[in-house]
Length: 158
View 1 (cartoon, rainbow, N blue to C red):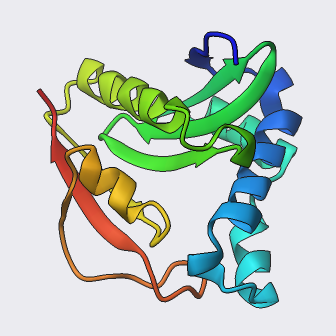
View 2 (view 1 turned 90 degrees about the vertical axis):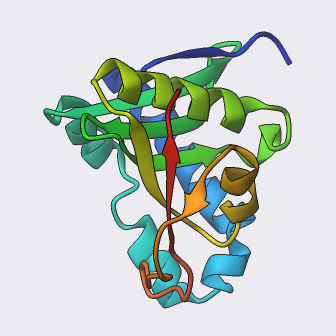
């Protein structure tokens, strides 16, 4: 693996970024969707290039990608209010530090926007990852896309 570049997403990233998000959900988040086609359908419904391009243009939203040798390998987003709304990694680079690097970039962006903390809702799959990266649980579990797991979390930024 070459050095990972983390940058703001551009429209040309849409197809690759959507493939990353779709593969991440299908292949890595089985604990959340349990292979249920209805849950998968709802969760994947907005992971399309046209929607991705709208996210780029959305005021108050920072959409970022991690790129390895010209290929998008992770996708993340954070609002100007400090809410991390996306953080997906390609199964091909899982456990190689890409998610941690992207999370750091999202937190830095939130801090640049004047936030003293980040919030997010974690999947069951990513819960240990966020806890290991300084996040604390911040409320009862929610039901996202029909799953039984959505864990509100927060982290005070330094």
